[in-house]
Image (cartoon, rainbow, N blue to C red; front, side, top):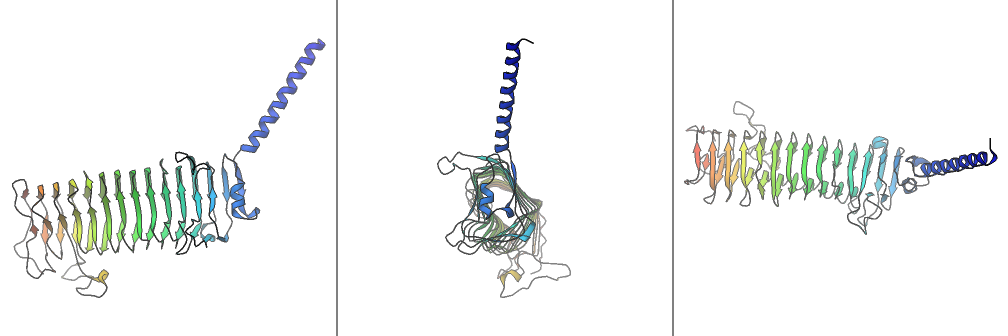
Length: 414
């Protein structure tokens, strides 16, 4: 072989080899890594060991006191523990979260995002002076699964601008100072199979779109169950909502196109579903039992509402027997029932519902309501807590109303 040609081939081969070596080194430096946190002096050091490309952080069993938040900036990252045996305890008393998830440059660029962060299988607890359990900002495709988050001074989970496809599933969110789950500016949200107990509110969803909240259990909340504001195109179905001191579900600030269906709403001291500012919404197939002030209330800033196929009832269990007491110092043990209240609203259908065991009338409306269609409802055993027998329907006559085909017995037990 010609010497010059041989030298050329050799030089070319060396250059290729050097290039491949450099490329392989670069890949090695940036490739996702598996981090075993037990091998690091502290948890933040383990978080910091992740490359920008992400990886997996495996938390060991044990209790870990946090004086400052654990901060994670990497995308394509899984943070996984050993179930409740991995316990992060936030001892901070200056309102700081236990965990912060956010892009590195989020403080200077509010449009910054990172993608695909998952948290699974550990416990976070705090104290009355600590902040959120998890504060997540600017995380797309955030997935939180199987966490226990309790006794934090702020929200259990606080999601801000986690816009694309967040998923919160199979978590236990209890005894947090504010909401169990607070969502601001989210889209295509799944909240499924969680348990919420004795937070201030269970869930708050603000300035968002397409919330899908199904199969959750909410109990003993110190204020409201679900508060939704400035959100549209959403569904709440198959949830158990019990013993809120306030109201089970509130829709406010330009909500529209929301369906509330197949939920059990029980033992609420204020109300069941309060449509404060909601349009084009459907309330169907729910059971409202032992709700004190109203089952469904449609306010003056709401309209174009369908209320159908619901059961509004008290604690009657047959043969004149009631599970709850007529009088009791604990209001949650009282036998009560409330129906539908319509206040200065318009274009409302109330059809195919059952109203029995009501403390007052089944349906009431004021004289400013317009275009009410009330038909095919059953009324029985009403006005149990009024001084004199009252009408099942307290709806002033109006030319725009159509009220027909309702079953109203002439006599009704008190």
